[in-house]
Image (cartoon, rainbow, N blue to C red; front, side):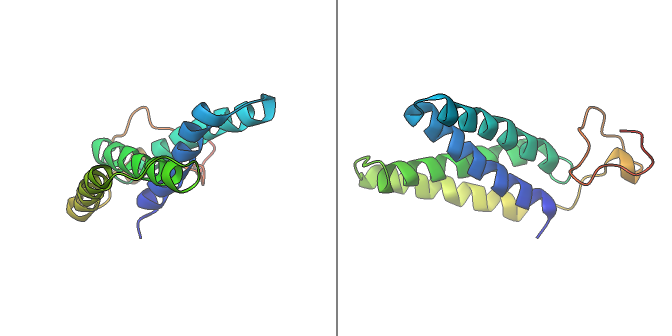
Length: 131
């Protein structure tokens, strides 16, 4: 599995955390965790865009976040089950899987000799000390 897809998945998990946190957070600790989840979700999304196209990464990120949020709300927080909602989520999931399937190889970054201006350093950092 490409690291970019792993980062999209991890970011989507944090996205579910902050979306649910916005609705259910009460108190300083819960709000602090919610804000940390916001920062981490987008940090992982930025790292994912080093390996996969930004539009594809964002579409999959939001699709997985939506799926996770709806499932969590129905299973944990008592959101009513609606067949139409589940079917539409299945269509969304099919789109996410389709995007992953048709997205090609790794994008060239500045470290590879390509040009990727404005990208944050990857989690592993950059060699040579010029971040």
